[in-house]
Amino acid sequence: MRRFSNLRWTIIGLFVVAMVINYLARSVLGVAAPAIMAEQHISAVEYSWITGAFQVGIMFQPVAGYLLDLVGLKIGFTLFVAVWSMITMAHGLATGWLGFAGLRGALGLVEGSAQPAGMKLVAEWFPAKERGVAGGIYQIGASFGAVFAPPLVAWAVLNHSWRAAFFVAGGLGLLWVIAWLVWYQTPARHRHLSAGERAYIVEGQEVALAVTRQRPPLWALLRRRNLWAIAGARFLADPVWGMLSLWMPLYLVQVRHFDLGQIALFAWLPFLAADLGCLFGPAVVAWLQRRGVDLIDARRWAFTLGAVLMTGMMFVGTASSPVAAIALLCLGGFAHQTLSVTVITLASDLFPQDQVATVTGMSGTAANLGVLIFTLVLGSLVGAVGYQPFFVLLGLLDLAGAALLWSLIRKPA
Image (tube, rainbow, N blue to C red; front, top):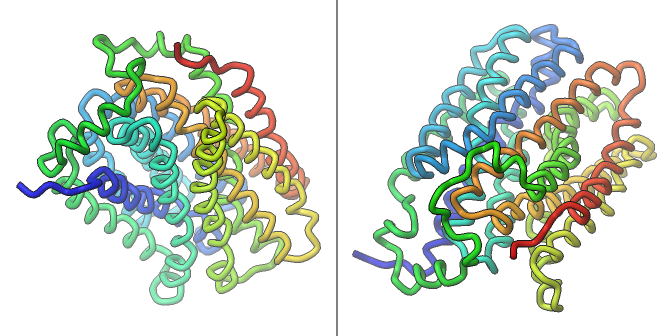
């Protein structure tokens, strides 16, 4: 049997493709929203309920994480991806805001498995010193999915209809499932993993975070202050991603008067900047560690830096030109992924391997509750107050998140 060097990087590479498809599937709606709302006569308030349904569904991430910890990534994640792919394709048959809301809720329920799966994979396949980089790499998939959505929707609308974009995104997921079943296995069972690389992975894990003999019940995890720190920071951080992926295309159309061609040309740029943030956050952590800062504090400083950069979002609505507004939105995407990949990776630094997916799911529930509240309030008030107050709010929330990380987290003994 042939052994591959650095096999762990092929595993994370395959997972990156899953994240691209995951975020492509969820981002198509936001880009297609102007066309869908016009055709289906959907109001801003009804659209907020459609997007809110997704956030309600995805708040069940702890269930997805618990199932992944229970049955493993190979079978568990296969089922989740297959189901979300079929639900995505069903969007192409939807009519009326209630139909879209039902499908979005179902999509959120299964797509919420992606983040817990990613952190579980990182915890299992990478030594502690590489987890930040591996986490940043797989988070790139989230941004790239959103990058590809505008051109895909533009192509679909111009050549077929917005419905074709959902069929393409769902079909890609079904193809990915085949590759996952062929290639993925745990480090202990992968036939192509060399003995040297297996030893490197195992020896690089913290002894305190080894698999526990008896997994604690969910209620016991809820008593951990480290969980509340991560969850609170994500609750405050993720509304920015909701703005970029769900509301930014509408903002550019309604306020900056972009047409479909301009959306295809420019709406992906904040997500490209977000890709750079996925790498910048781990790079900051590594730079600080080389200068003697311990891992947990390095992650807290990286999150704080991202929070400071996020204050640029306060000026999007007052920018004098569309170009300046896009530039500030790019800064927001960069800052968000800088701090987001950092706080998500903290789950693998603070909890044992067989709890990482569950903890990531719990904190993901908090993150998506933040998006849900934000999108419902925005949908109900944007007609009266406009977008600017919401940009100001987004520029300040992450500073509070940084304060939570510094005040609540306790390092492993």
